[in-house]
Image 1 (cartoon, rainbow, N blue to C red):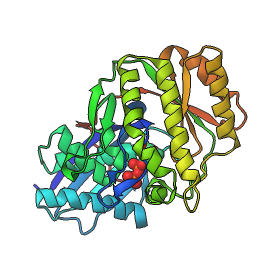
Image 2 (cartoon, rainbow, N blue to C red; image 1 turned 30 degrees about the vertical axis):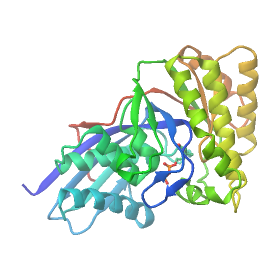
Image 3 (cartoon, rainbow, N blue to C red; image 1 turned 45 degrees about the vertical axis):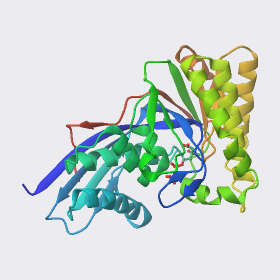
Length: 331
Ligand code: DP6
């Protein structure tokens, strides 16, 4: 057999308690634990094909052949997997996101989770969920949380072998929705990887990290008890703490723009009027508006009416990353 091929589908995830800053940047050992929800509706499908006939690695993302940093990051991740499989075969990877490209929605979580499962399946490594999560983490920290399904926690452990994410509630546990209010289509100047490296330059980071066990506990319990108001307050507090660190880093990282703030104040007004809704924001200007699924249509319409909101994407709690039998074409 000259070719070994496998594919995987992965959901992206939204962090309710954010990962920001590493104790070890190379190993992606986080400074603090995080909690997230997998997002069905914001997904990546990836096919990995290994062959002795290939002379170099190739990476086609959303029908565009990648080079430079994107290709190097993919190859470096595959190197870990090749080493485990004791293989020297080059790989061709083709990957597609279900969500529109260039709208500032990060695809590294679903991307590295799908890549990990596709490559490990192709090389028949026979790994369990924990091992796959640990390997996905080396490609992108948040990707380790996209390996299990539903509501997931990635603790901050001392040992790199224990650094993986585990689910604590399945996707059917709570019918939440994530409505992503897209407010900018521009590529951000500093991505997450660069941002993590700056976190410790903020005087606020140590206080944020020290307080994380409290936020994790409140968030975990709010999800377990389906207590929306407690969830709303803790995820907003957590987001504002992370953006406080970003804004006070040297150099400062200010990801918000005026429509970001318009959406945030709109969400707060809606919650004051009794609607279960909250915001959370990653390393970019787009706002993830979290609510329960019965408010989806009403909120989508509402968000579309805000000046500067160009699109609203919808996602619900998602499944684990799985190997699939349909392969993407390498053309
Ligand atoms: C703000 O996982 O994208 O979204 O490991 O460098 O790829 P790398 O970083 P990444 O960081 C995610 C940062 C965040 C918060 C979160 O998802 O927890």
